[in-house]
Image (cartoon, rainbow, N blue to C red; front, side, top):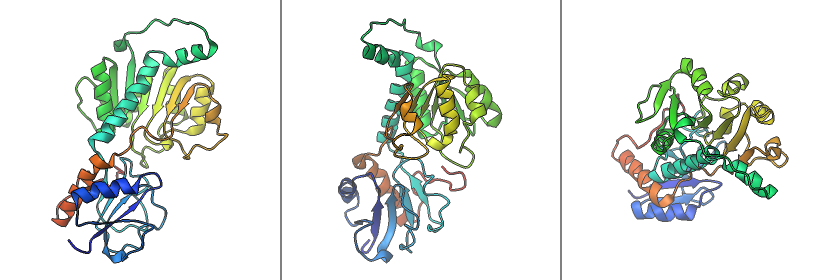
Length: 311
């Protein structure tokens, strides 16, 4: 397909790795970083992460946009993008990385590792008797591809796992509930809460002050979805009062998290720089290439999102 180009933009991903990976899959595709010159009319595909406002306007012939991640909140609802298919990445490497992060964070609390980290700093030997995993209730908020995989992995380890989603799901050894009416009870029932919700108009601020207060006193909170899922001021208040005893946060309202932000000063918060799940070009390029092949054949691409739902 001579004359077809893909434009790449990401402030964090390595374009050289993506160029090499896609060259293997689609040798005929002209791969261009957005800063490189070329005939914009030849650009048919975009592979992007957090493109700036107006990014798509110079490319009148785009047929497909692929987001370099699972969350598409930076793509949907824009005024510079025509009505073309939008896809997200959902490769096995992303699933494995997210699952490993969630397992780490949950196990850290289940085995009281944060307490041993503190006793190590004090130079004091302190014994805490381990609890059976089956007695620890873990709730996974959001049961999409990433959330479902994490919930199943936790259940396979022996945790008492429940999951909440907008629509009803069925997962082995996971107590699945759904809908707005079930959310309050779900929050009140779990000692460790993991957020894997997509950011949509329905989920923005869904963990407000009232809902955070529903968590059992001493609960642990893990957010690997989007910072805007939770009311940040209410979360900080709950952490300061120890109603939420601990939090592991990989996502924030503003990223990078600014110096001097109140979260940095809390000794019961572990902060990581939005790395819970990253794409691996060598693996993910297969899906990107297959979607392009399907568009060329007039077929539906892989992992297409519904802009109205936001996922």
